[in-house]
Image 1 (cartoon, one colour):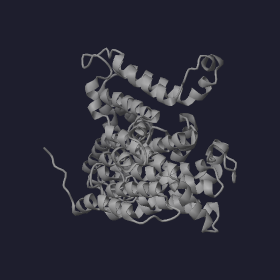
Image 2: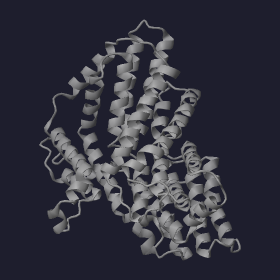
Image 3: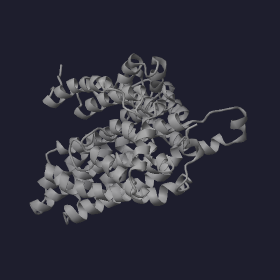
Length: 501
């Protein structure tokens, strides 16, 4: 059995978490922090220490509220545990099931190869094709799974080019480096486009629904996330291929042959693939037009709920009951396939939401927001920029799931205290949490491509630093000009749903 190495950082973190928890609990009462707020602060500190040091699995840390909130008297266990059964968790679960079916029948690979083939045979076209395919798949399946799938194909292309080419070694090295970074960065960027593309998006939706009763549907997020992802993808392509690591290679025939060979290896599209594709397209269309369907008179009269979670789980269930028409399996999915489901991420959603609820209930979110609003004369734009910058650079060294769970509620409190709609800043901060381009350990895709051996740390830091800064600028521009338009936000006005009842 493989054992996880317990590093000194993890050892110290494992001990420091409960020590700081007890230390904060033992402090004398400090106005305006109430005793309950002090307890929530102690629990949150313990969780943050374990999340930052990765003393134990992120999902295990996310279960602490179920234990500590009841034991400290902050909330009963029924209330603490309720967050782990939130309907948004089922939205992500349904998305995971669809992704499992795509992977099981190799439909994701076929789609990726189609896209790469369509981009042409030039070196730039091949890189752009890998970027597009990776980003598109990452909109629907995890960025880790997408990277693991795309990396071997990219490696074959690189190896073939290096073995059968008389081109200068430096150009080939730049091509390989660009290809590897393009796969990692595109996997991170693509997930930002849809609600189910990356966990921070769902955590944000969770928070807005549970604490404010405001629902962000699939289409709402798509109208912001998709253009943001496309623009950032284009910026990344130019900065990567034209500025930092230009290869100046022209038309390439060998890589094109690799793609054709891979498609021939897959053979013609089979019945299970067609069935999964049909369900996938149906699900996407229902997500995009769910609000319009919900507005139909028949639907309203019969009190039918077309929530994104219902659509996701309906599609997930269909995968288990529709015959595959293949000898490989009776149905498109079997329950044994769910061993690949990232159950830990679902637990992390629940833990983050439980903490956010407690932070709001004891007034800590409002307290932090008021203290910042009262002690600075800075404009909302400057404060927004600082918050986005903090989120983006912190996510280089900390899980964006854990960071979003803690940081987004605080940002919402700051926004309200400054007289702004919390959506305005929280969406931007959530998007920034997926823009970690500097370090190998920042995201799983970064780590996976770094292990390929084609990239050195200083090369990733060199381009990643500038991509981080460009991402911050793009997020601020979206906060200023796009998000208010899409969500009909009136600047300088707190909506009724965000006012404490």
